[in-house]
Length: 323
Ligand SMILES: Nc1ncnc2c1ncn2[C@@H]1O[C@H](COP(=O)(O)OP(=O)(O)O)[C@@H](O)[C@H]1O
Ligand SMILES: [Mg+2]
Image 1 (spheres, rainbow, N blue to C red):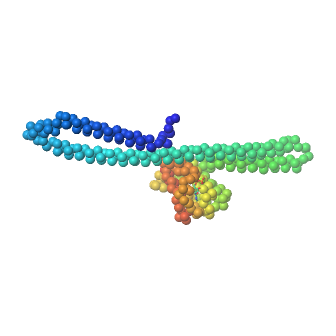
Image 2 (image 1 turned 45 degrees about the vertical axis):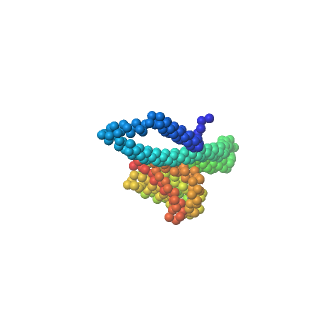
Image 3 (image 1 turned 90 degrees about the vertical axis):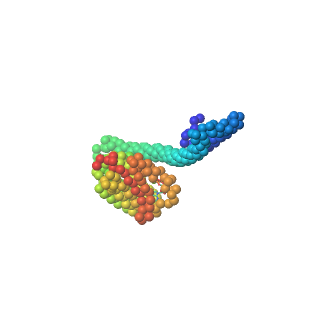
């Protein structure tokens, strides 16, 4: 079976490295021994010395000393290159480890995304089946009653009509809530700032936690992906505040910054603040937010706010946005 490159054993490559070092050392020892035996057999040094003396006029006898220096120089050179290669290998291994960690976290995220998507679909299907189906049956029953009601039964007809009106109203509310979950309609019809304003107001109403939204110089026309990203960042942050923060007040600020080239989003709460480092890394909400921001070449920081609650700041380039 082919081995997953992510989980390839480092031990196997270390063993192979040791084996090749042993072979190389063996070759060096064998060559040295052969050269020594060759020198003994042919009296090499004596011959070289005699040859040097014969050509002393050309200073050939100075060559051995110079060659020793060249040898030392080459040793120093190869030692430096080895150190450099080791450094580069270490850096490459560190980068490789980082890539593997990212890959694994991406796999987790992808799995989690599929789970969330399936859960959302299941909830929608259940709501469609239970609420929509039941209400349609009720409307049909009332409409049938009106169609076949005896001529004098004005009160019964009126009651049925009222029930139809009430059920339709409930259905409308249900469909609106579903649509909001699937896609914030205000984002398409009115733009990001009104959509965020509406989100904050609805969230405040649902949770009882104060939510103040401050938009500063935000362009009216924004790239679709940038708009939905900022909306989802605020949505997930507010969900986290409601679930984890025990806060009384949240401040959401969206402003154009960096000479108009970026949008800076800050969400601050006055809650219990961050726990241990590990607590932050465990969740997929924050990881998903980071992934969304990174996919638009932005940056995101999660830290302590001025009131020691949580402050999330994301900076996204406006490059893709129509200004
Ligand atoms: N506003 C906040 N106040 C306090 N703790 C928070 C806040 N936002 C996030 N956290 C902590 O960070 C963790 C990770 O959040 P997240 O990634 O959204 O995952 P989840 O909400 O599913 O737990 C949370 O479990 C919580 O402990
Ligand atoms: Mg969350």
